[in-house]
Length: 266
Image (tube, helix red, strand yellow):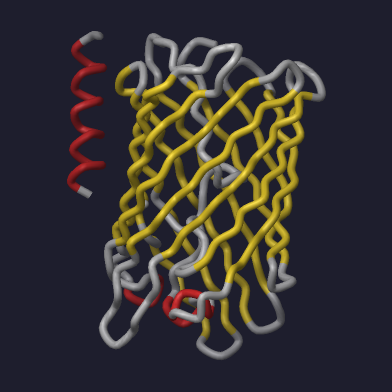
C-alpha cells in the first residue's frame, strides 16, 4: 500500500468513526459486497438525481458518492446530499441534507459454494438546516449477504437504526430488510430490482424533513415497503449509468438516476 493510499484510508476512517444522506447516489439502497481486489487507485465517485412530487410539494434530491476500498476487506463510503423542496404552502427550501458515512467489513469471502458475509456500521450526521433534518445523529448496524451467479447477482441487507429524538418528538428505532437482484442482459447492460421493507423510523435513504416523517417513525409500528426497477449501463471501462423508478407502499412514485466513475482498473 503506497503513502497516498495510507493517507486517504486514515482520513476516511476518522470521518466514519468520528462521525449516514437521505438520498443515495445509486438507485438501489442495498449494499453490495463484491470481491475487493487491489486496484491502483480503488476510488469510486458518483452522483444521482431523485424526484418525487404531487400537486402540493415537489422534492429534488442530488446525492453524491465517495467510496474507497481502504483495505482488501474494508470499504468506506461518504454520501453528502443537496435537497430542493418546492411547497405550495411554505414556498421553496434548499440546502444540504444529512451526511451519511458507512464502513462495511467483509469477514467471510465468497466462494462457489457460499456467499460473502459482511458487517456494516453507519452514522448519519444531521444537516445544518433544521428544516431539512431531525437535527439528531442516527446510528445503524447491520449485515450484508452477497452471492454472484452466472447470469445474475443477489444481495440482501439488514439494518437496525438507533434514531435520535429531536426535542418534543419521540421517534421509534427502525429496522430494515432489503433484497436486490441484478440480472445481466449483456456484458454492459443489467436489469436491477429491489424490494425494501421497514418498520419504525422509516427507510434508510428516506428524507428526514421532520414534517414529512412517516407515521411509523412516531411509534405506530406500521411496516412500509418500496420496490425499485431500473437499468444499469456500463458505457465504457470506468463509467456506469443507472436509471429507474421506485413504487412505495403509500401509492407514490419516485424517479431516480445515477452515475458513477470507478478510478480503479477493471
